[in-house]
Length: 183
Image (tube, rainbow, N blue to C red; front, side, top):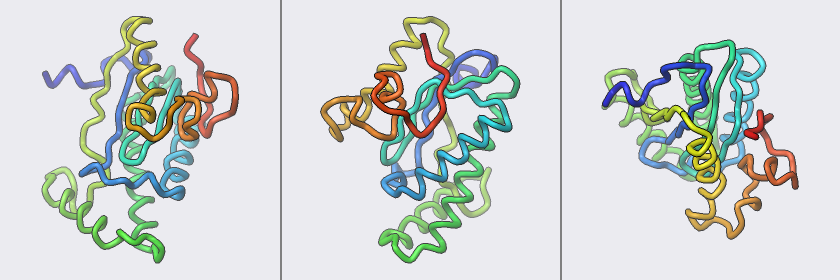
């Protein structure tokens, strides 16, 4: 079972999910989404990350990713580590986040329960990377990602969600992340 959820071949495409501990709605805040976007852009420009699809909702992020010239496991580790540290800094300095104390307490509690952390954990430990072995599976995951905000009940039409690659695929707007398109 453990081998099922690992990046075996970094040159393949993978469906991943990054989830905030306790499903905390951290991404309702624009500054947290921007930290994630900046980190993705950095990883694209400096580490070889290729993003094929994404959707950010309030407590988790779905993506289809790959790389030609890097180690996908290392890229994801660095992406999650950077965003975690930056969001923590912003949260600690925030005067406008009404849930600040509770969120810091929950992230601190999660960190203390996890032996891999010292005192803080923002992301759940696992990404459950699923290698997209067939075109059918790839298209199924692409549709799943784009329909996620509809299924949650945030919007009625998938192309309405701003924090998704769906608008890029429909051709009606440019999203926040540069994409490699699935043909």
